[in-house]
Image (tube, rainbow over all chains, first blue to last red; front, side, top):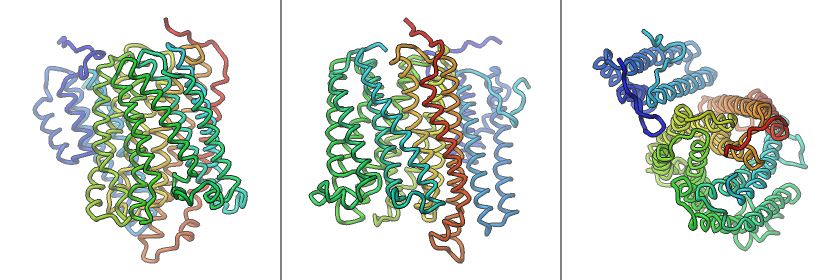
Length: 135
Length: 459
């Protein structure tokens, strides 16, 4: 299927809006409305996962899978640090806070890359946790 | 270089870099004083080293902003500068005043300096970042007004663009908010209240406009993306910056004796303050990702992208870390604040000034871009300084978290100095990261002197 894209040099948002929305929800889940944005992302995926545009499918699949993996790693390792180290241990806080902040910020930056790729009409694969893009 | 008068930017950039070197040397001195308390005492006491470190930062950034304006405005307005001569006179006035002030800090006891410079007539000294003697403060106002006259007159006679208007708004804001440094009420609560009008509304208000305008200018030049697209982003970013940043001043009013409602206003609005920095990151990557051409100045592109990334991390993420009132109740004034301050200043303002210098200096020297060899060295300096700053921030954050625990959370809280001893390991690691930063800065300096085949200016 040949899909015409707008010129990225003259248009503010040449990429497909659903792909942009998926990446935006990924970022909103990290920064503004954790949980709620994830539910909306799942609904978006449910509605459009077999969309005709491969870019839409790519971004939906990448964001949903990375949300699950990234969120899982973020929460489970943070909990493990405090569970193993103990809440009364200052080193649990040193390691736990630094881990959470760095991992969380890392996911945001990857989300920014995804959003930029979606806005400009390109496909994207989240490193390590993102599924292979041609699936 | 399209306009002759843009050349006046060069001495400003050179002075900025020179003062940057001085700032880092004093940073290393005080970093060592954290762990070797009597290092260089009594010649350079800690309080003096700190004052020189922070004041040099402010002054060299101002030199950078002014140089950037002198370079950018003629090109944006498509006309020569109103008075290049005035710009050069102001350069020397500002440089001499700055140098005399630093020498005063170093060689005259602060109380004597205050007495000798008329602080009893109008008391403005003794406040963090605003330690400058009265004549220096007056000098800053005169230089700023004359500078704004020059830039505004240039804009009045030329083309008006969104970028130059936003830059001018930021520069006028910078000058206007500095006037609050002359108001020093006896009531300590009011004193702090207005002191933040200068400090906060500079770095989390009007300076963000300057940052966004400079970034937008460089991105137009290096990507070739339509001005209209970039200007739309610029409007969004400055709106977000002002909406969040102005009331976000409240995060400084939590514990100074201001009404309690500031804990709500400050928490809510400053929690939103990362958003304009986030938008800047998206903006920078978005424009580079859709660029029309590969610009020969790869180093400038790298600095521009780095500004977006590091500003969000330092100002946004590390700011959010301790901005909510219930968290700030524990973290206030600890090394977590220092961690945030270091990365935010570096990411937002140091990097944007280096971005514009990196873009403009080759053009001022008659070429589109430096040689490959010089650019490789400059990119090395980027990575050395940036990675070193990440580690400085991480070590200070670790020190801060431990400090909060030992001093404020523990069932058996330690005194300030006992807690400081316990985090000394992190101060040592911070100092070594600082040494790497300094090596990066020297590498940056060296990149100006590397010869090779330079890229010609495009016709």
